[in-house]
Amino acid sequence: MKKYRILFSVLLFVAGSAFVLQDSPEQLPAQSGVPGSVSIISVSGTIGPTTTQYIKRGLQASLERGDELLVIELDTPGGLLSSTQEIVQELLGSSHPTVVYVTPEGANAGSAGTFITLAAHIAAMSPATNIGAASPVSMGGGEMDSVSQKKIFNFSESYIETIAERRGRNTEWAKSAVRDGASITSDEAVDINVVDLIAENLDDLLSQIDGMEVEGKVLRTENAPQNRIPQNFAEIFFSFLIRPEVMLILTLVSIYGIIGEVSNPGAIVPGMAGAIALILLLYGVAAMPVNIAGFLLIGLAIILFVAEAFTPAFGLLIAGGAVSFFLGALMLFQDLPEEMQLSWYWLVPATIVTVLFFGWIVTSGIKAQFTGVHSGIESEVGREAEVSDRITPEIEGRIFHNGEYWRAASDDILNEGDRCIIVRFEGLKVFVKPKSKQTKNKELSDG
Image (cartoon, rainbow, N blue to C red):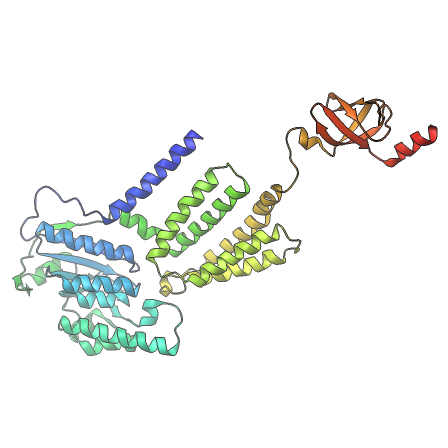
């Protein structure tokens, strides 16, 4: 018991430390940055809450170091509109020079990446990269009715136009990226004033922007010292945590753990694992736009699975629960961008494992709570014993059971060698009855 408590305390400490570290400012070196230095952060994959936190932290760290500017290396297929808005607001509202550099070759600033690139003071791309396809469908995910779709399109179109106009970039193309899903190459982006320049690498980028004026400041970036700011532990951990497949696994662990603890009280480990998984899952749900209808369907599936343990439905409730669980898991992340939704490679195995779990382990465990006792003398009730000494309603005798002799009483006549059934225990005396009425009838006829 003690070792489980220690393990639980350690896990809570690690989780709590991660939460604290997520919002803690970066510990900067004792000495300030060298004048002319630049800081670089690398953003790849989908744009989400942890990306917002990373960019905000990187911008603040670069400002406190006294850097010339912050370079954001970007390669993303898109992401959440809410996170994109936070990043754009941070870039537009900062007087500290920022550069969004779409890199390496073959990278893409798609959907949310288009908004972020246009919001930077300086926008640059590597050769053979792309930008565009910023339609709200790919940014928000899910299905929309015609009215909602029109509202989202109008908002996104005006929003990206405002960003492009604020930075002096091609507003017509920016609107077409939302309205028509337009996408262009790096060469085309420079030609029509979507981005400012093409750079072969980071050194080439810093060389080309040297001498540019941003926010009334002339940049000195030629051969500038470079300081890379990696993601911290909290950002790595929580970016992993809010992946849909990880959230699905946490959902399963929380269900299995809590139900396992309820069906086997005192096991500790299942309950502890389920509680931790549930806490982490609630964080992910708060950070991501999860579909509530999906959670309700998963809850219905659990009810149907448990009901199967008490109702002789011959597997119908299990089948209904499997369908409900699958549809719930499918709907759970439907409001996310397509690249963040769950694939069938996760949904089908998760459904099968859940059906097996509830159909076997949980059903057996819950039924065990309502069966007879399996330890102590009470567990012997209903079992057979052998009569050692004659028993009558007036005279007590003895029985032999499980290697022991017991003083016995009965309302029937039992002879030595007869088989009897144990009815109940009262102290050290046991009450029995004949195994069959044939024994009693035989005694009466002999009498």
